[in-house]
Image 1: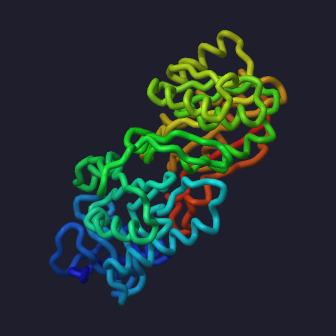
Image 2: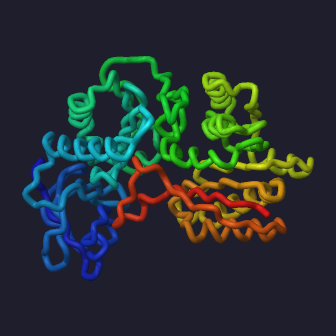
Image 3: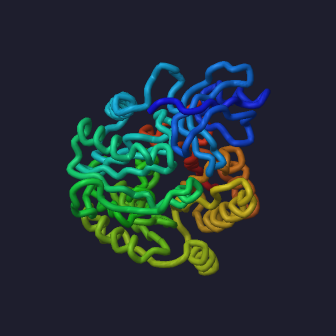
Length: 394
């Protein structure tokens, strides 16, 4: 695609973009020269006219331009996507092991803003979350088919952020149809994944390495796994020697899969699953003076905006407070936040407040992040979203 217009930033608004961030907000723009249509490729210049990059434009979005390349001579065409996706694929071959399920393309962190591609066994799931990348969906699918040769590709464009781009929500097959219930292998375990109906693109790939951190914490333990979804943390805990695991989730459909996952891994006699709201269940179990040796809290994102951060902090504090009260002395808490707006510092502050209010002392064993197939771009803090903290409760 050829450049159709030039976007010049206002004075003093260029350092973040010049430093490597791919987003240009409407409020940062001084003026636009030339004609363009939404989704077109434009050049981005600083206020002096210095070249910063080329990317796709969409005036319907608060993020006016997403930069694709810093090379003025690089064309945005099939060869461009071939190079970018090949580079992303080669990176995963270096950092991913013992699984046939991982993230192939992580949007901005792989210099393909708003594109997500996940691999589940022989199949791929793709999300094109902004207009400028959605325009290239067919080209991207062709590149994926030629480079990775999947048995099929499924589109999971049912994410609300697409509506901010003026795009419809849709799901379906890109090419031939196939059975969207697939099995994956992960660290010697087998899990069933619903590509069409599961959370995100079907499964929480980003917690893969954090699940392995349970190994030294579970022997003989009574474990509570809240927001357990399809039971992956539960299955790991049971496999690592837990005497009893109770998983709780609000989705009955997810718990049906969790039960099958436990059976596939031979831990159905250790794991049990209960349908219910984890907030309500935590309160009820605390009142009943239930005690656990390990509590796992892996809730969905409580906030997707700064405006909702205060309420989200209350939610995180509530569940961690209940957990602290139910953990036996010397036991452990694994607690997570997948909200970018909940910074690591704020999350640690919330956890500490919850411990103090519960009258418990806690010491940090380790702080973990998202798996290595979800790399964090140093210039783009938005790519760091998952916090996983393991504490011993005294």
